[in-house]
Length: 298
Image 1 (cartoon, one colour):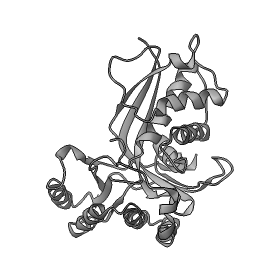
Image 2 (cartoon, rainbow, N blue to C red; image 1 turned 120 degrees about the horizontal axis):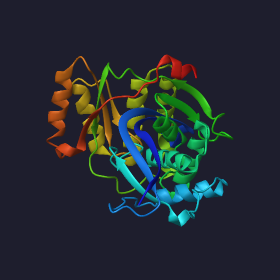
Image 3 (cartoon, rainbow, N blue to C red; image 1 turned 180 degrees about the vertical axis):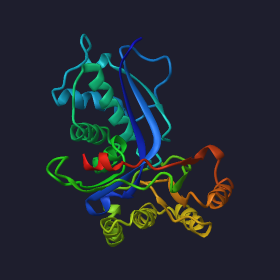
């Protein structure tokens, strides 16, 4: 067994669910994933229940990109090492598909720009059924740092980027994630319509540069869409204990909680509260990934 290509990406949390208004944005998190393309099956069992990685290879071939020398698409196998819990709304599918595309680029010495990688990732997620919107904003956040506001109905990936920002300074904030048990079902597009006004409020907050307010408003709207009473309570309790922002990410069930790094006691108090609700390994502490000024200008 030989590694023929390696790709890396990272997780993210939702700022604005694209199914709410047709505009979506996600914020990069320090939750790394590494995907390796192999010429033979790994001895370690691959956890890919939605066959996302097979969809990545199919999408690659459908876009008339080359396969590694001497291999057919069924000859490509995968190994994944990820810090992103699956099916929680933390963009594990976007990150895995982005990293897999990058691994195929290395395996075939193919050069793709960021928009092309995002496009392939989005196509693969749609084909495998893990996304109802294409998750273009998620793929951007998992490939690059910071955030991009995207129009999910734009004609192409590049023109769909409406706004972008460097993100929140990792040194200023502690990010706590209440991952909870994996979601059992995904909401349908029609479930979002009753909360359109709330998602529009989140969009306005983002346009005004109020990222933490956007995260909170979007998260509350998602709790309503998914009827997640416990998620709303976790978010509310976090505010009582000193959080500056808190809300459901993606379609849940992960609740993202943002605490000022100068108030370590608040983060510890929130962790203690969460430990009464879920196993310790479902409580994750991480940080944002932000672009520096040079990256933003590029």
